[in-house]
Image 1 (cartoon, rainbow, N blue to C red):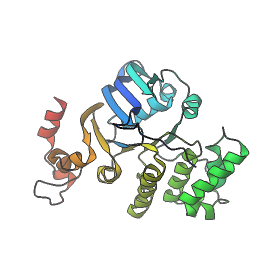
Image 2 (spheres, helix red, strand yellow):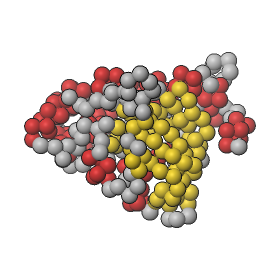
Image 3 (cartoon, one colour):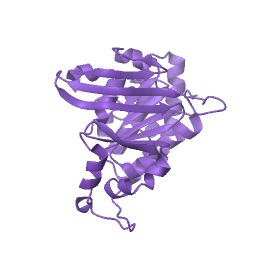
Length: 278
């Protein structure tokens, strides 16, 4: 079975991932993330929301050990997995410790088959485990079983996203991080992807960190929501509470106080944003 997480008995789940007062810079000068703290308890779904350029993907790069590839570094603070600072831990060791990323844009090997792409996610596994895990991925995504011999570059965007998720699951992650999984996909396909993510959490107890601009969709499956603007966390709380927050409804969900849908362009959010960032 895909590895599961169990919560501590008799209380709140301990954090599997914790980011403490992180300040992240590029080229020793450009500040992308400042004083960000967040917690991802075991067995939970945490959504990190915000517009493009807010700093969400930078946090994921820090978590997965790929920040240095873009001359970035965590200048201050810590990123803790099971209470241990990841520090300069290389990406392969982070994967071995149970963190898998579904990157923005999917980043498949376009000239390889669906099955080859999926198998690469389990490169640290033996043959028996590879067969078992592939069977589980095909159970989650029956369409991929039908297309296992097809070249990945010829799949639809939704099918490619399924391959990217399946590849990440081959490592049997304890923490699955998804970077903009709904980007560029039709609403029906987005629903299918999110249904699978919700199933991974509900049935297997998998811990999920979901980075999104699609706030409405993410809040439907999240337990906790953090909202980023300009490199900072400006709001956070339980998803149910956040869905009822008037600021979130107006700015992120596009509803006015009367409940009618409004154009994002017409939302009068500047005073609210000034208050959040003050």
